[in-house]
Image (cartoon, rainbow, N blue to C red; front, side):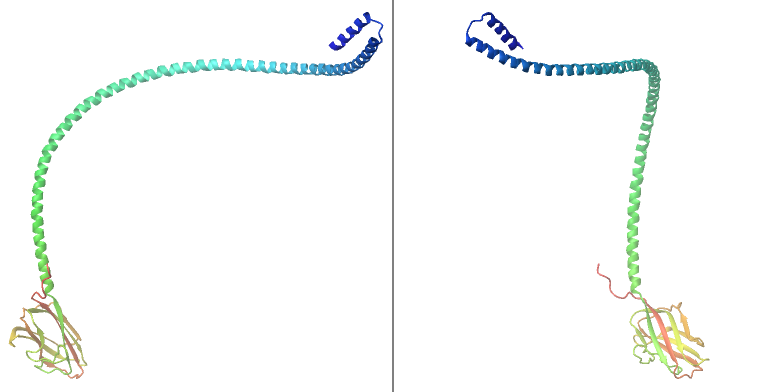
Length: 325
């Protein structure tokens, strides 16, 4: 637009300064033609811009309406929020006032309670101090009593230790003696010897055999090389004789062949097949031979009869040797 104004002004000035010159006329014509073309373009552009300005004005009007609606909505929301805020402020102010009143009341109550508690603490302190004084006095008295008791206890302990030492020494002595007695008693063992006879028994005979079956005779029987006693015997018989009556005599001969007294006899009907005596304890016998003699015999005829005489003897001497210490 500025360029057009400038060129138009120049054309008018040219008209006023017109000179008769073909060159100037030609230039003027060409410039006028060129300007006319530019004016056409300018008009087209101006029309287009006018349309755009119209659309812009329409959009501005629409936007202005929307802005007004938004502003109205924002104003309404702001008014509602302001109302709610004012209401909440009033509620908070009222609640804060009530809370402060409760705090003041609780503070007054706590202060009164603290005063009461402090008073109770002071009273309890006095009571505890008095009780501590009494307790300390009792402790001192008990310490003195315990000191005296400890002295007595120490004396009693010393006496008891001495008595225990004496008792332990006596106990050990008794244990040693008992151990010796048990060892010696173990050496005095009880042993079993068996004599057997078969056939018809004859008066004054020595039919019982010891060992490998050799019959006995006076002074030749069961040899025992130490002092002993007979503590029991058992007799078993296997025979068809029903009314038999037999008397057995146990004779002892010393190592020199001398008949030793006392002797003892076993007699009876022997109607039962077994006879036992476990309570017998003879007087001590010296080393020698035990012989079984038939002292009496009646009603025996079974040649297949069998007799077994079992002797239980106990050593009166300590056998074996002392174990190494």
